[in-house]
Length: 131
Image (cartoon, rainbow, N blue to C red):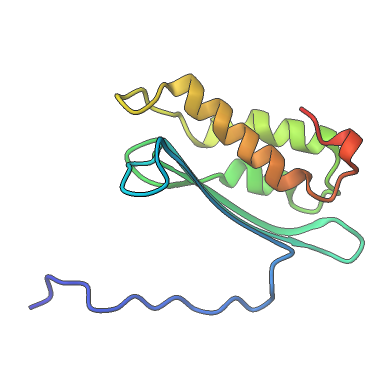
């Protein structure tokens, strides 16, 4: 008794996010251990500023890590190329990728920054999205 998970309850979000992301990066689409996993939720206010951001990375360290520094930095800001660039720099304050047989630290860091950049850049005009 008490050794098996019988159910997981996930509460509904109060408000529909502006943007949702789940991305798995691995050698194969199925039956492969991920090199990096990212999940994000973003709420923008009507005027375009960040109301709330939640972003987490997995397969980078022993446990999944939320990017609390990145989330706090973006709060209340309008998404600009400069904000996106700084958020990608701050990513390393929240997670320190590991080296293992699946991938290198440098690869995981670069891929994670690219995923974060893409996720945050969606409201920007195309000419401003490149990093």
